[in-house]
Image 1: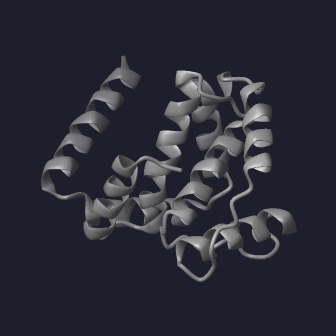
Image 2 (image 1 turned 120 degrees about the horizontal axis):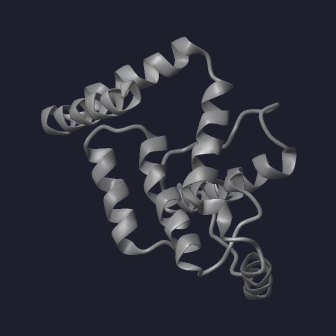
Length: 167
């Protein structure tokens, strides 16, 4: 179960008019932090992200399951279940045995999947599958919901990055 602080941050994002995927980002970040602290591991960076998204759905973030053809049937079913729990359409069955078994398996997985380089590699791979127009549209939408102060900070950071790349 995600911490109340994470749920509060996600609700704050919702009030700010940010997209469901941005709201879910709070849960993914929390999951990455948990792995980095050594609470458990993950088989891959994708799995770490998937755990975070599942927590977000269960906490009520309006993030529908992936469409058919995007992922395996089992993944879609699992996401559908989590989504319904979060939307109050279904009550979650507590399964302590399964929960303990999963926890035990995750504890044996590597922690390096939440490293900076692993996350960077995953991000680049995901972005490369999207079209330039799609990436550009996402950036435009992000700039609309950022606000002046954060937009200014982002511009300064981008300028620093460009300067570093030139030298």
